[in-house]
Image (cartoon, rainbow, N blue to C red):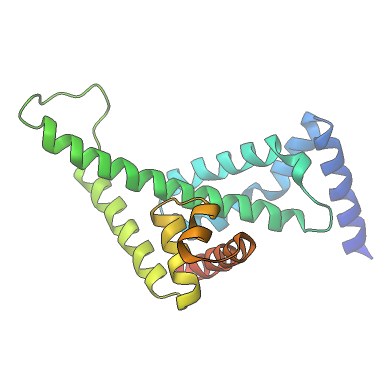
Length: 190
């Protein structure tokens, strides 16, 4: 009985949030922020990065709350956004490292100063190790999830590009990517 009352209360908060009620947004944030942070921290081991991703997760959730479907648990919807945001974070970091390495090779003899703050060798090492862990986790996936995960999370292919590359229906690609995300999150936590 209590579970149903909590669910109804949550649905009402979500409906208010859809109508742009700021206090409803805040109450949902208060209710879920610790759990989302803990979930993200299981994927992103650096607390500051996990905190930033948690904040970005709620920003995305509240901007897109009208897309939430009431037949899903709100927490599941939030965790999915958090997981996607964490994977996006890794892709951006990897892209930044690749760009940084290429730029450093070209600009090394031209200048020793940069307009952008430089990353410490420790930050680069942590990011490289994280990337290597992601690749290792992807390689450990079942074959039917491995290639879609590699194309999506490492090479940042769109669903349609993956479908074309692997000669699969787009819905199958989406399903495989969803499953790969869940498996990777489980591997990452352990």
